[in-house]
Image 1: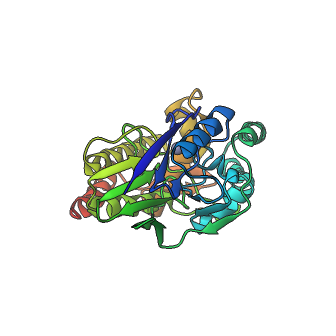
Image 2: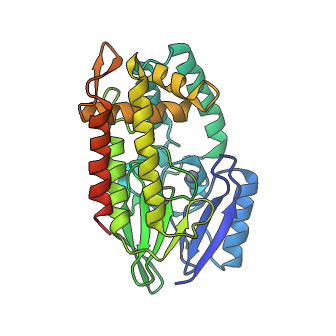
Length: 318
Ligand SMILES: [Zn+2]
């Protein structure tokens, strides 16, 4: 399997997006829609003797830094949950997310302001991609077959590609070195959400059991065993659980988020991270919700036990 890497400028903190060209046929992620990024992408494709018309683009997940310039390609594939987000550049998704932020205590004025800002900045970073098809279970790239793994957690419609013969994983953002990808909430409608941390944990379990020799991540590089990174992720989720638990003394999600992280951190990220945690803890009987506020309904020992059980179940997989 021949893998070429194009590093495409990305203004987000994770740093440049890695675009992978596999056997000069399949492109995994396109990068963001900024002029310099598109230029870098086009140059790399030219060097690889692959053009936009014949290339098959597979999108790891529907975030601007991974699909912003997908509109340039004629053949685009993604998880079925991602296609509608690509088609309207996530507009309907953001509308739902802000409805949830408001119902979790974000002041209306702030939510509207943020929503407007997202619309404005996002519009420059992505263009709608109207020709997205469902990716299916495998992707053929020349003589190589890549298995499509559904790896929800950072985004529900997140996929990774796995090449079994060489034990290679193209991970997108589900595995990055030095960053724990945010459990971004996934609204089903304006009042229901998926249990995103549970999904994340199942994904980590699946990846932990997988034999992986090389990971090609969505940003930066990974030069150490993937199981080491998964163990770090579990530690950081557990730590976050405890922090949210300790702040849940009659606060709503917005109040927990701002008292925990302060207002200077990115509000979108701290809100999704907090909501994902209160959903998780409430589902496990650790927190309860009354009149929009969260209260502890178990003690720290119960929470410790919950995480010990989760970690044992995953680490047993290897
Ligand atoms: Zn990313």
